[in-house]
Image (cartoon, rainbow, N blue to C red):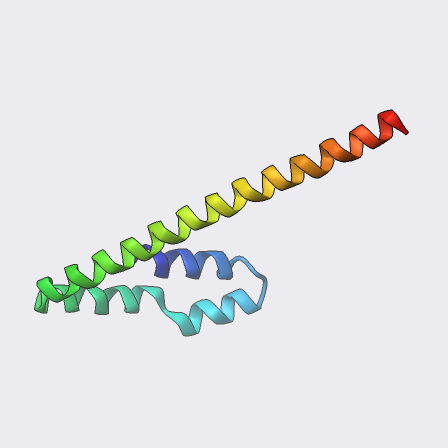
Length: 88
């Protein structure tokens, strides 16, 4: 549900295109369908939600690992560049 609202908001801020997207995406209607599905089959919905949460957490973890590696490699190249500037 938060993903639907977040997507609607983040694309909705783009002038004209965002307005058209919000009209056709209809986040509230999608959230109503999700709630109805949950009320009909809570076990199935909870299982799917666990997989989705694991996927999102894995993506966040991967992003931060990649960011740390990028910073480490970037620091190495900046340090090397500064060293060459100092030593000539």
